[in-house]
Image (cartoon, rainbow, N blue to C red; front, side, top):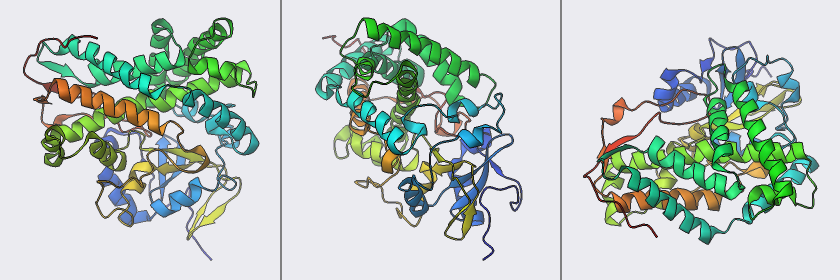
Length: 408
């Protein structure tokens, strides 16, 4: 059987670059073209000279996500041939944490991660988001305009994550800069970003050994699995990576939908459709992590009629798979079969927490500023380039000037 190879050098034409402004501006057009030309497996580049196979078929993705034996998340063989200067390497390299291991080692880290997350008081988090949202809204409500990314979504998520992890604002600022370099993954600063991130969080881990608190890092430090300092560090880094940019982008992408789609613009504010409906649609159509859940087959493997080569990244396009015509038929309301939280042993354990934060943040803003609208036409908004995220550069809005909200 002469099956095509999904990610070798022998592809029909050039690879599709996932790091360009053109792709970022309209990824759904790119996915349609990919599907028409290649089917469920697409030869792509994550950055110049870094080939991968992008999975855009929903059923194929589900099979892969549920088969860590044949599709392990361990990139160590792959990364040996990738120079340290490669902008996506810091985001993809191996570390002793939950996202880059399988089997017993993955289970060791997964249990500790779940314990750290499950210790968060969801009722208390609801109140904390409301308080932070009120404080942030009061910083711009009298101006009549704001960038909801830099002035609202990012500081809200950032403050909440630091609080849950027990991280001071000073350390947290260093974390934020490092994460921004890593998620952009299009410049030469990704390695610097990982260095900044590691140094700041190592200080936090050491601090929690001396001064424990009711926070996630303390729960890592005190977990009976006895994680080493390095293991705690990389698992905390993984939590920042999984929460900071994806959470802020989920909030912003959902706000964009509510402000621009007639089905939501009036209905959410009028009460006939909920913020949860809007969140579900965004998780289908524009999930904040568009392409990820990467695996590295140990040997060539045939999936359908396509050979996937050994030790090359197989990247799940959560966005393209969600929009596979074979799956959805374009109906999203009440449909939660999307892959935005991933599936299988590496599925996100913080789904209830993440959903709560996003919904509360959006509801608080819409309640405070119900007449808010975009400050520019939606087609003038800029989507940030990068192979992994679906992220706006800014979300400028205008609204009638309003007096500050009462703090509680």
